[in-house]
Image (tube, rainbow, N blue to C red; front, side):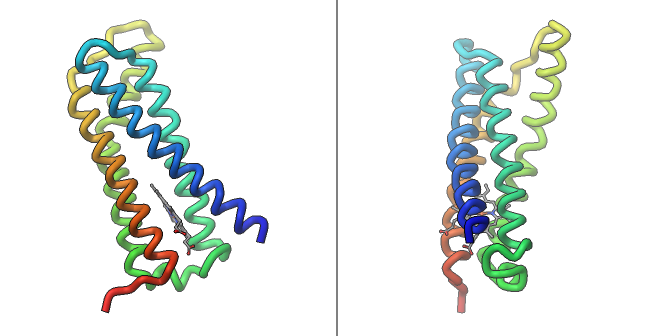
Length: 151
Ligand code: HEM
């Protein structure tokens, strides 16, 4: 029961942290695009977003398939679980371009070379779309947890 509670708490904390971090990253990208921001702010927010995504995946995976909630069978037959996973994969796909660019930025920073922030506006938009998808995941999660089905 305690593990149950612990995993649920960490999952919700990771949601709160992740939502805040991806919104902050979007704002930091936007500031950078307008010439008033710092690369450091983008990278800090990105680290927190990355950590929370991993924690969501690990705690979510344990809850869904580790027998800490309603069991694997329940989730695999719950349409809103599939919606939730589809939205999560969508976030991962949207994340590919910013992730590659931010790895290049980190390398450039460590070498002391210039950073190309030409796509900062695009990445700000992507980050804010990801934040919206996180909110949609919460809608799916709340229905999934309560056994909502269609038809
Ligand atoms: C951005 C990613 C995610 C967000 C924002 C999120 C959010 C949430 C929230 C808010 C709940 C609580 C629902 C409620 O009781 O009302 C929840 C529960 C849950 N989530 Fe996630 N989640 C995410 C990713 C994942 C992943 C990747 C998995 C599985 C691989 C997962 C599996 C679960 C499970 C099994 C529950 C428990 C549902 C129940 O009580 O039956 N989540 N999630």
